[in-house]
Amino acid sequence: MSELKSRSENTPRSPERRRFISAATATAAGLTIAPGVMLYKVAHGRSDEQSANSAVRWGMLVDATQCATGCNDCVTACSTENGWTPVAEARHPKQAPQWIRKLVLQDPLTQMETNLPMMCQHCDEAPCVDVCPTGASFKRADGIVLVNRHTCIGCRYCMMACPYKARSLVHESLNDTQKSDVPRGIGCVESCTLCVQKIDRGDGNTACAEACTAAGHNALLFGDMNDPESAISKRLRELPTKQVRADLNLNLGVRYHGI
Amino acid sequence: MAGKMKRLLALGVVVLTTAALAWAGSDTQPKAGGAPKPTITRAVKGEQCVEPTEFMRRNHMKLLDHHRDETVLQGIRTKKYSLKECINCHASEKTGSVATAKDDFCVSCHSYAAVKIDCFDCHSTKPQGSVAMHPLNAETAHYTHQMAAQANSKVSAEEMAKVAQ
Image 1 (cartoon, rainbow over the protein chains, first blue to last red):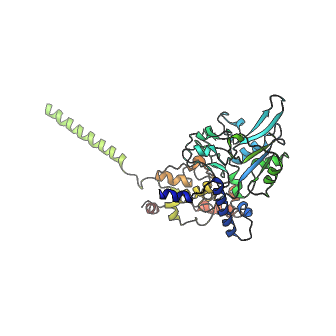
Image 2 (cartoon, rainbow over the protein chains, first blue to last red):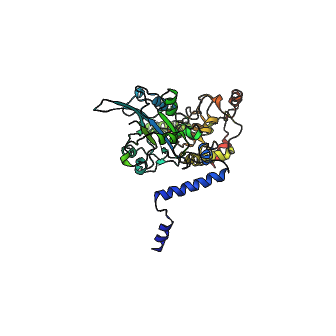
Image 3 (cartoon, rainbow over the protein chains, first blue to last red):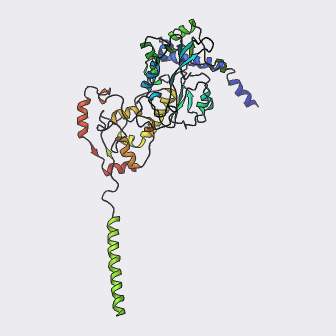
């Protein structure tokens, strides 16, 4: 009984408190690395040896009012960057992986159409992570939800659990067509990684957002939602945004404006 | 008459048995040198591996496993011990890959040791971009290539025996 009591005394009472404690430790670590260097600088310009840390939360703001009808540039950029075959070129389109896809929503009363890209929402409380029987589905410290293909057994439980249909299984052997930065293969589940290879390289942007900006639409804004000075945080303060299926209370990393 | 026939039959049996034994014997004789030794080609780029060769032959899998967990789970992408860097240096000049042809760096030893690897179900066997892009020696890659191609060597039986011990 006494053992139980002492344990509960040491355990943080609420998730808020736990988050505060981990943020405080991260701050201390950031400061000791280089005095005078701002914490967010340390977090963004992370060196190769440093692990991803929870001082950062990567996220994306989708401005559906800017998303153009018929434009597919974000999807093409994603497939080029990450090496997955576009659905139109796939031998079995129904099985083809889709890391990101364009949706058109129509209001049945007014016929108003809304364009938006849909992909992994990088939930804070991700259902795919909850259900994974092997722990292969996980959330990295900086908020990116990933699949560890070394432990994924391809059971597809996460695909069932995902409210956004964001995940796909690789059904067929890829025959050495993978990008050297993006390993992916038969029998494993995969989804949007927020271009984790680019983030770790220090690019600070994703392929889809780059393509959207290049096309002049500026519908995608990627950045650190924990940094109050980042462009995405500023935009999120100004614009009314929504989380898709906000009722599920998953605290999404992807926010939509204009839906 | 019957005795003569019997003796002839016995002789025939003896002759046939000897012939059969001789034929079988020639087939089961061990080939000189045993199983074909793996061809180990010197890495096209770089002078020395990240650890001594003997250490790498025994322990590369431990280093790779440790590094892979750090990379996937924590995003630590140091170059030393990363599979990508192995491939960058060891990709064959002919196929541009470490595991396409049977003489390529990884496959050559692994088929000799009969150890199946599934790294390349997911990982690309080829370096990123063209070979000349490699940061180690972007400017001199062309010459080091030529020199390395001349330095291909079969591993001696003694060397292999040392590893197997």
